[in-house]
Amino acid sequence: MLVVMKRGATQPEIDAVCDRIKEFGITPVPLPGVERMAIGTFGSTSRAAADAVESMPGVSEVVPVSRPFKLASREVIASDSVVRVGGVPVGGGHALAVMAGPCSIESRDQTLATARAVRAAGAAILRGGAFKPRSSPYTFRGLGEEGLAILAEARAETGLAIVTEVLTPGDVDAVARVADCLQIGARNMQNYALLDAVGEQPKPVLLKRGMSATVEELLLSAEYVLARGNRSVILCERGIRTFEKYTRNTFDVNAIPLLRRLSHLPVVADPSHGTGKWYLVAPVALAAVAAGADGLLVEVHPSPDHALSDGFQSLTFENFASLMAQVDRIARAVGRPIAGAAA
Image (cartoon, rainbow, N blue to C red; front, top):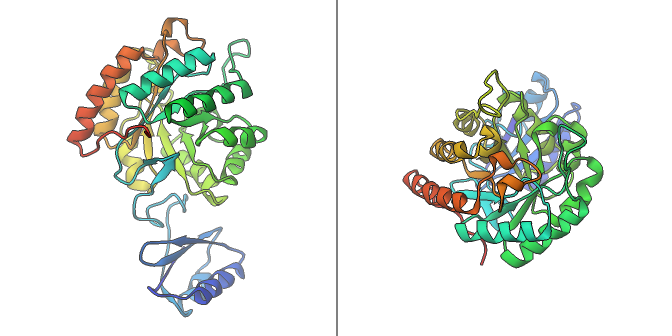
């Protein structure tokens, strides 16, 4: 249920409602709004609890929430949420946020060259994996903490905010010390211990849809992070595994407007993993922007043929610059200019 407080409700009235909710074994979640306070609930809600709370001082109404995902639902928060990655706002009608960079951090020279190139082309956030989950244990799995140090240097030089993946609960603190946003990859979307861990720290979380996950499962995974107190979650559509063999995944473009209808959380698109083919990245990116994406996540490499991971879906610097010019036209057509990097 959602308890909507009256305008001007006092803090003692709000505290009293929270205490009453707890008496029924339910966890209250205060949700401050621009005009009034609301209190969401985490747990099974009974009719008796709703009746008991509805008559309390300061309460305007009690609204049942039908979605299994509560805190991520527009039934609880109607207006678009804005998540700030470094100084870059994502969602809420702000300018399109483009996150670009190599699949994995391979070296200092590779990362700095890519950071300079994507910044010059108009990206606002640098993406790159210091820790990489790979299907085979014998392939390159990232530089680890050395990669984090390289990302920190790239941010210091270019002003780009940093998004990078975290793989285990034990790595959360180390990654959060460097990253402006922690990425949960598709393979870890339902790693609930990891979702709890990133939910207990304040940095924004970029949550990728699992390879075979439904939209509802993605939103329930976001709920884990939100329920732990971290309200800065960005959803990412990155394609799902289907019967199709000509592409790496099948990019689910209709998930973007659907997620925006169901949830207040920002939605970004990853056309690189969504297609697995560098020549499909641009058209799918344009489709995602037209469909309402709040941002893009694009893989870029100085020499994709020599990349240690995902070179076949990475853009060259020239191709990324060309993509950004096309994206700019589509974004402006739908009222979304591109967010530039910090000066």
